[in-house]
Length: 381
Image (cartoon, rainbow, N blue to C red; front, top):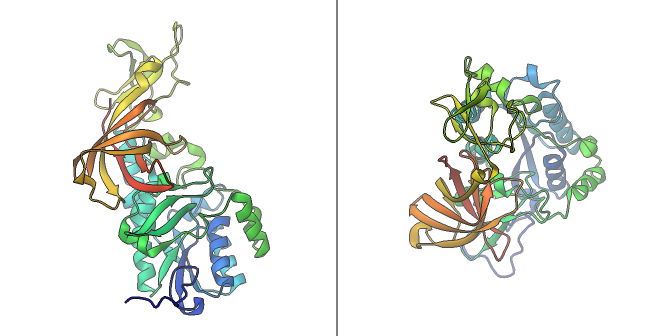
């Protein structure tokens, strides 16, 4: 239905009063999502807060610095009580285990370096939770992610956050056009995290000074290996550390303890030059090490591509964009050559070091803040 030119849209983009606009807010218990919920409640929206229980509370209750733990559920509930909107806790432990944790363990054991936060957004938050929001008759779902949704000629577009230091586009590249139509990101335009904390203080939220989550929520203190050994007993099988010619230089206690690009902790001494992990050969139980130049990669195979451009992905022979191959690195100019509807070869104009299977390759417009989606790096080099 076409809107009259005089029809005024509310701040979430709907042509009706906030009080008649229901929005489900995904609340992790942290300051970001709490500010989103409080802000929308203060603006008069019909807010419903939902928090996901993703893993065992017994282990999570005492753990600080992670989302979706027991203390965080308490914090989210307290915000809802203070602001007077309903709050629900949904047990997604089995879904999370099947959709995120198991793949994380298997990917690591296969020599990849997975990014479970992307899979969680893709398979849990923006899939099952989003469907729950629709079941609650919500007009949209809002999150505390630092990313921007803008409406262009072809519909909703994904754009980088105003604050490049907080931008979470790398973790949200797999958001589909259909999901993007339904999602809202009220914090993406803020200049920095201090502005978010200032809003939290303004709304009187007890979480205003709560530290940011740091680790992957189900990996205490960043110790991936111990988590994987619990999930997959016997996974840490010893083997050889070898050079590119497969000459044995030392031994290791399990391939899962190593990542591409690692230099420290190799346990091999007496060398004339620094060596880095350049390949993980899971089948041979070998960690391959070599000089730094062996980490340099120009051609990257990518699959499971989620394309957010206005034209079909394989309608062109080449796309000239910028890409990120790690969340902490700036976008670099590249050429994407589609090899199918959701596969491509990405050529980096400047080689990158430490590119690893299991990481994401995210596509950015070189002339604006727009994100064109991305895919998964899937083959060793």
